[in-house]
Amino acid sequence: MAAHDREPTMRADRITFSIAPDHPALPGHFPGDPVVPGVLVLAHVQAALAARRGPLRLTGVPQAKFLAPLVPGEPCTIVFAHTSAGETRFECTSGARSVARGVLRFAADDHHRD
Image 1: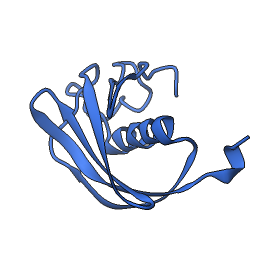
Image 2 (image 1 turned 180 degrees about the vertical axis):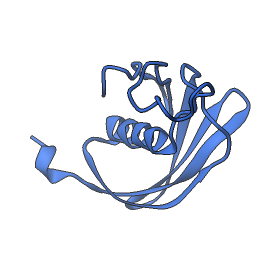
Image 3 (image 1 turned 90 degrees about the horizontal axis):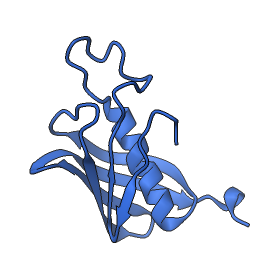
């Protein structure tokens, strides 16, 4: 996790994170009205899933919808639902707003196991 990312908090099937206002991905996205880029949200979803299930190799994102902007410093909660072998659904919320949702496809990353 990068130094500009705030440490996630974990509770059962939920993980909450926020992106610091000085994160290097934010300048220019958008000046005067910063928004967390969707790819950064997906990176946190992938990292949170790996933290729950062990090292994973992302093999695809068959579905991803970004439904509302996430602003720097705003808490975002990720909830996972296992759908089938190698796929997991996720939803990211901030307060009552759904920020993003989709499906990650993955395989176990045997190169990082002991």
